[in-house]
Length: 220
Image 1 (cartoon, rainbow, N blue to C red):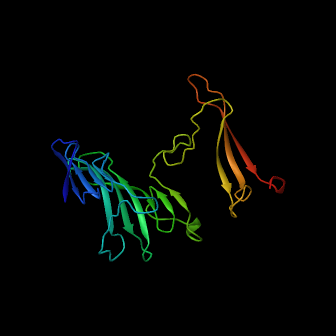
Image 2: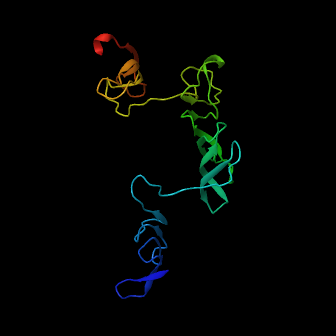
Image 3: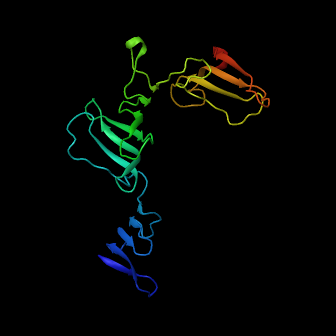
């Protein structure tokens, strides 16, 4: 354990291993691991392809057990959001879970909003995956919600694909591709659903069109 004298002034920094493995700056209060000049309250510096931070629980023993990182106000008085690693039903698989506080009152209760499963499935508003008609393979992405709207144009459970450039004739789309390896033509788009955004008139919505496209062998 040593201290660092800055240009002959009073001792300012405290370090474990004066070479700079762990350093506490008296001036800023920042803690540096692997750096002698931490730029945040805690900075861990390492080389590429190595772990800069590890959250470890040595006693995982079943499903739905977790270690989490909270974003709070006033210590434990209020939790805004949480990122958790949760054990999966599949042996040794881990889910990454994102949760937020709906904000109705101060407290630590958070609600799960998105989950990436150990098998690579993504659920937004869904904690489990689904399959078509209850059979077949699970789907890679599930977007779920609880909406009460009965009008087509005002449904509140859905996905929005938005082009922020409102120039007339611009497009945005949903594309379906297959992948067979590397190379320029090995990740082709086989089919697309494309929206063509029309002119914007003051006080009115833009006129929109949908185009359905499919590939052919000529495009290969």
